[in-house]
Length: 174
Image (cartoon, rainbow, N blue to C red; front, side):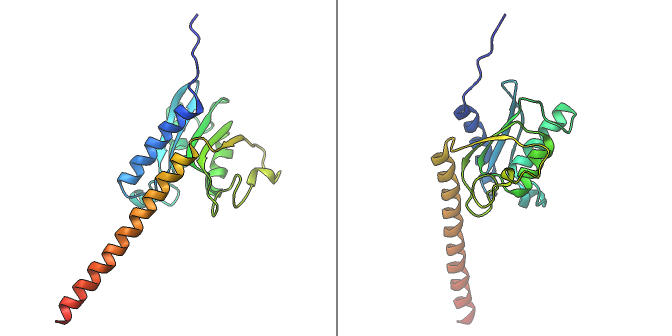
């Protein structure tokens, strides 16, 4: 009999981090997610609301959709864990409740929109017929740095664009 040794949370979060890098490559906010069941990835996704013209195309929802398609079921397995680089928002927490996730592990906290420990603690309300375990801080510094670097680059690009527009505007006046 072969016994599979489960990979660590850090290992799986690194896989989610790589999904987030894919989002950054296409200009999306770098958030990545994977769903693991039975020591295997059954769903993966990254933020794509802009490129897909879909406000619901958050990394978590993308991973849930893929996992449910693979499983041909709208519910996730009893052992399913979501690894996501940023604390889920209200919409994503709702989707995770409906999909019956068992556990969520996230990297960076989201002070403005986070709905597990930051802006809202939705699971504390007692309103839901399903809740899940969650852990924060897995590869937190790495995940936070990825987001910070993305937004720093975006601000610099906007600054350069304004300078270019200003320069072009002066040329037109002359």
